[in-house]
Picture 1: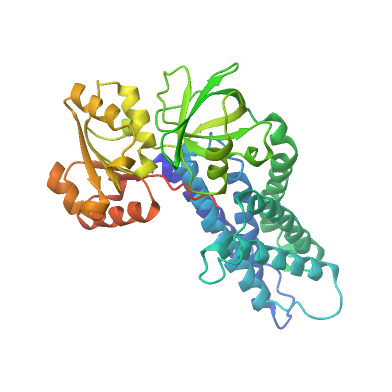
Picture 2 (picture 1 turned 90 degrees about the horizontal axis):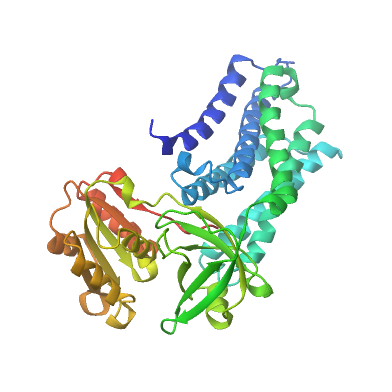
Length: 425
């Protein structure tokens, strides 16, 4: 099994083991009329608890875990899928179990956990729901604040399980398995909220210069105050700025400078609340704190024949790669830069210079206002067939997913298509 598949496989294995243990070590049948229903309901609820514990681990942003999931972005995608499955399992548990009757603390805790999880899920998904999203669109810091409470509801769900009379108590092997993982999740949640903010390594940097390249894009140059960040070309980092509350929430941005550069460079488009404030108000000499580098988006892990496709500000990781090989690439690369109009083709002089000194590097410009959407057919016309090539995509998600679909339809295996998903909520 490839290393990057191990993380997801391990999570699936935890759930499979849970179900298997319930079957191998079944609870004692006390002849209650709803025994089979409760049996099934507790299999669902314990599986949900295990997934929630896994999500706490994923939320730690551990660089150690990245290789096992193919990058932090994929860890977040796994986190989202787990969350959806948790909601399905919890709702199924709720509807097949009887939670009525006289007041019971355990049952009340279960209802609190259910309502809390549903509200959190609704607030997370609302911006993507037609007609509703316009009215409920939390800012990133608001969403992050609400998201913190999911750990509390996880603990409440665990207390619910232990405060009611359940079948889990009659099967010690399953109980030990579930509780050991669930309480590990509680410990990790406590670490994440109370200890990690104090011990997580964040490097101080000084904003050396702020260059507004056009009406929406800003280039920031950062100089280390003490220790420099260790990163690979094309990786991203989390950054926040001291002294200005509106810029104090860490956000991820791709590093556009080469790893051997003395300073870090970020090239950022104002496309949201935080990035617009950054564009409007950031000035030199502000202090920043940096955490990273993250990401497994790396051309060095791919073959000799490569096609890089950038949409607008998606040029940033490719800039880092180009600046790293500095005219001496050992790969044959066709870079497609798709922008609406020529004025949006940032760093064009640098890209053309890289092409002039590197015979293996070929630049292709695509102006969508003139040429329409960039398609695989147009890419093949300019750079030849897809056989034996690997593709790296960075740009708006609709463009990325469309090209991925076209590539797979043309016979390119999924392993030959590389991209990152920067949707972290």
